[in-house]
Image (cartoon, rainbow, N blue to C red; front, top):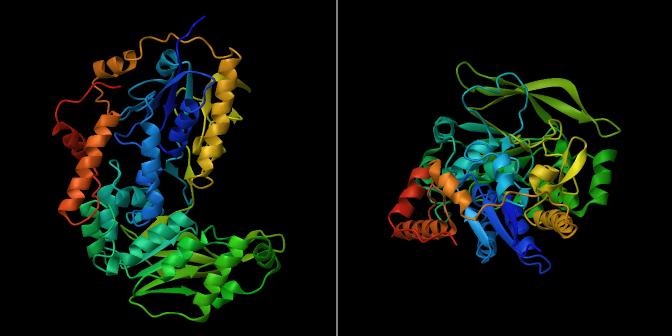
Length: 463
């Protein structure tokens, strides 16, 4: 009988991937070895590159994920892009099973005229920039920020709220110095002239997807006046039912009623505008304004346009209307739902689930839930994998020596980043931050990440 450990690849090192690795290594029924593979040199996915830097408590989950990655039977292989450095078929030959957790990294578009003008950006680009993502579109974001007095953020979810909050803090030097934002981000935000921010939602305040804690945070910013039109809070059978049935909605609406009843003064205005949808972005050569239409709710809760239009002056438009998954060559993909089709985590090919290939996280269920949602989701997928392994249903793999994969990547000129490399980067970021009176400063380019590793002694073997 084959006594070799079950060898599993987890593609993606965000919460879903690391929780999947945890579920695999902390069970005792099957001996396993796990390789966590990521296209970025650093682990943690959206916890590092998606959570707003001023939300320090949420970003603190990195410490938990870091501990989980240090399990003896887990390797981290960063800077390895599946589909470019390695194919799905090649990966399958090296492992008994693969769990894909590569998330939903693309943005959804508005589909309106003028959307591609300079100064019109997806929230994914803005968030990547202020979090120090090595692939961030720094030039486009900074050019837009440094020429904008007024900004429109389309969307009323927490990401839109994050973007609006970061922009609202531009006027107050040092307001973000306690974060781990890269130095060039702090410099740009300190010079950003934005003083009016409009968050647009096409439905009512009761339909906004904010969490109450983040919503209240907006109203506590120094020098920032949050404004809500009392007319947007008028009674309506649909919204009244939502308030009565959902405590979070009720709390959110209460917060916004407070703001509508007692407008604050401040140098920076944040306008929460509901029943408002963009229909065109105006500009000659770059964004100059947004044409918006007033909407209304029908008795069944549908949204209809009223024909009443106006223009919001703006030099920056950020669309924050959701994330979507993107196809990976070699994997099936549902172009409508933007996920990999599956049956309880087992990838579905040709109409049926297959053993040996699995999905977890946003690429499995779509961009829904909070960080903790990924734990139960990953455990469901791993349970299916282990059931297949126990039943002998996994297809045979070539299973060369464990180091054969890293040897193959080295032969192709891929510089694989290990967990030891991450430890070195972590130390370098802390040292850089301390030199500037901060807890940490994020290294924001692939070159700077590699330089941090190169300045240390020769790397230890991958373990």
